[in-house]
Image (cartoon, rainbow, N blue to C red; front, side, top):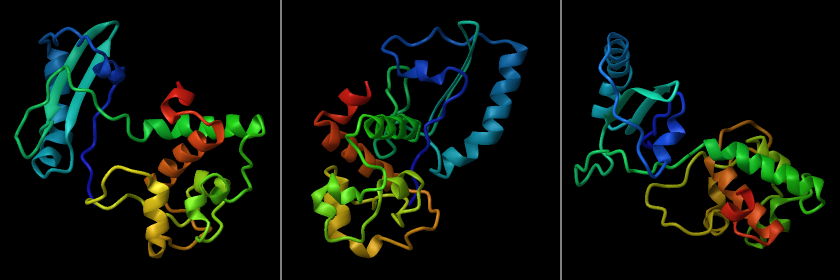
Length: 196
């Protein structure tokens, strides 16, 4: 499964702000960066392997802003400065920190099966919180393309055949989605609210 990647550079998180940064200034440095960015990203965007906005700022000034691909491929809607991008794997660190915090406060046992917090997983092999944190729970990398938003734990419970070898390292976005559900269940708060 291929997912478009959001590009981030320098303080690219400012691209998520409600007020876009000032337009880039054309300079020899900006032109070199633009050429280099195109070399790295243009073909990948044409191949639908990448979609996003690259923003490079220095000392509060926008050096380069380039968009690749489309914000909506089907409608051919281009990116614009007001689009908010998913933070994607940037949230893994926040999720791990939340789990460790809950462990230190006694709300999460790192050695416990995830099913202790997510009962929908009770019939699955006992995947521990630590195994999920370490990408060693045998979980698939991603959800299927046709997955509709909902509880990842319910999806996984309905698809136990998608669990691989437990104990082997295998990068998993699904695992961190499960950990977000663990954070919400253990803290009895919405994940985003708790992390905030």
